[in-house]
Length: 118
Image 1 (tube, rainbow, N blue to C red):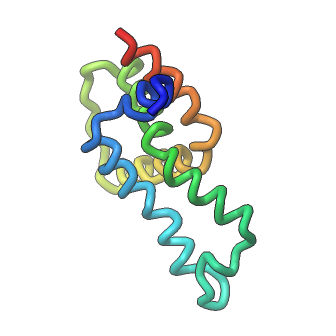
Image 2 (spheres, one colour):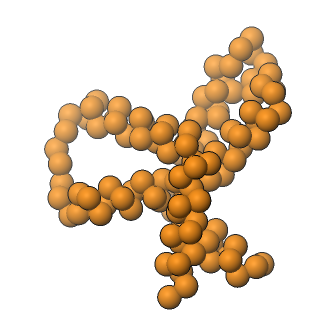
């Protein structure tokens, strides 16, 4: 494998990638179950299917960027929120990271490339 690909795409721990990938699968599965007339994702045009697949594959890298930025801002502080508010915020940030993974993930891939080069 090319060193650039190995350093960037292989920069996340496998357990983290699998966990985030499984969370990212929630959105296309939800679309599959709720799409028009029971035809599922196959009712969508091919280009939208490709975008959904790319967003799902890149979601772990997008989430890595989000969690790194939030971790830097919040630090080691702990906040107490009602569970419903926290769950809604978590779902919103997951949807945001999944929907914009095509744009956010390249930042994470570059970040991982330089971080794993040390």
